[in-house]
Image 1 (tube, rainbow, N blue to C red):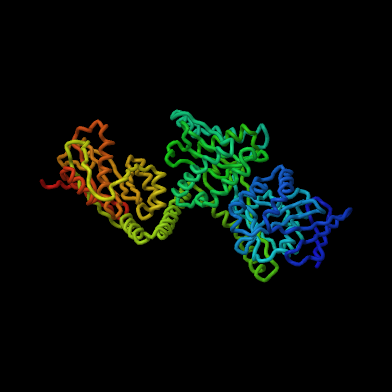
Image 2: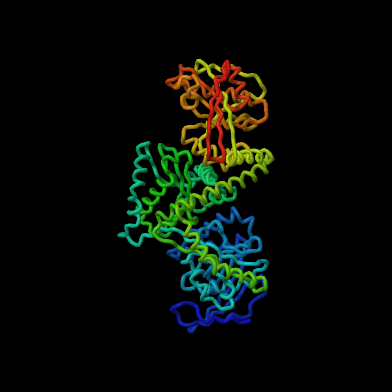
Length: 632
């Protein structure tokens, strides 16, 4: 069998490469590269044991460091950390290319579900072959030919996350026709970057000088002492990873998405990166802090005068300070001080990236099909996909405005929240309760809802609630929830709080309403919302002093056990204690609820029913309210 290449690289004299005597599968391939002035023997080794690949790490590191534009994702440290975390789900089939006894190229590949992928993907933002620039065409041709003839058990090779500057993307068109005809290039994303051409470039200065960002920085600085830094040792970084994971999961859950940090394997991967790379070798993990409290975290890489923002998150309960934007401002200032030539936002098409970026970088997926009939059929599909991809990209760009993106995000949050709620409820064995709760809420929001709240009165705002006997009252705790806590509650207990209801929860918190839960050793006992107002706002003309405080307790959920009554009693005691410092503490107090059990607790504490509030909502738009006095 013979293969001839008529063109290797633009600007070089035509070079003929003759490939003969291809070996049987699972054995090394031998290539003869016949140039005009010398003979070069290329051979390939298919590496199936990762220990063997680690033995070649010095050669791998030499090739990687020789490239002034190499990405951290092609480093041997990245590969070692990734394999330690995900290797159990993959079979190694990496191709090592030799010239004589010298390693001149590595195509790091794995086999997963009958498809071959780059080692490190989908977790690497960029992927590529590792070799020198001048040898790239020959190494790529040799590696693909060896893959085709020496590796079995795959239906398709999918080379994803290829930058337009990658060697595979730049040289695949110069491969031999027998290889090139089986390769299909499909555009995928456009990464947002900030490029600084030289020391006189003002790219970072213009972004750092944005007026609205300066105002937010001033607000944060007035709130306390701020600090932006990265953790300088692996031990320090490791100690902060758990908080980073927790808040990353919360932030994604709040928008109806699954965080990668929710996966134990991905958490282990980031821990392994801290161990393998560490701050000394390009890892940058740190936080923006206010009075020692982290508000936002970033996990990125710095290599070859480039900074890549890999993962980042912020504390949802600090959103008033816009910590995500201020974190980005500090990262840009860091990049400017370090003379970074390129700041890369990584994967994802979030709107904020286009606001700050100065350039876009195209990425591609390359599909390499086997010679069999199935490969030809898939090749036709990939060719059709490649032809339609530009139209898809144009449609995406046309819909990238703030209003449309918000509408899409709201729809996605509702859909993903509902799906995730069903899945979690099913796993916890509460699918029936979740379904009833979901359908009832759906009808109330879309068709009709009516809620009646009995309001009770007492002459003193700070009553001493007598203990209520009952099993299950021991070890009860009442906690007030912030938004981040509500996010966790919704994803852990969708039968209690619907994940799709989180946007409304955020609005309630901003208006001053409060959320509480009661827990004991058995788990969640009760959850409810409270709001505080004055009688004149909820019961005008009811014969009640207009400035009297009214505490309303609604949207309550309770478990079906005997700890519920003690939980409500403890809640009322906690609320009364909170309100004792109010200027109106000596005035008559009014407490209202739509929960029968809670109303019974109020009666047993000596509260007298005074009036009833009935609220109506029809078709999600029309609201009404009526107040009726209780007969003495």
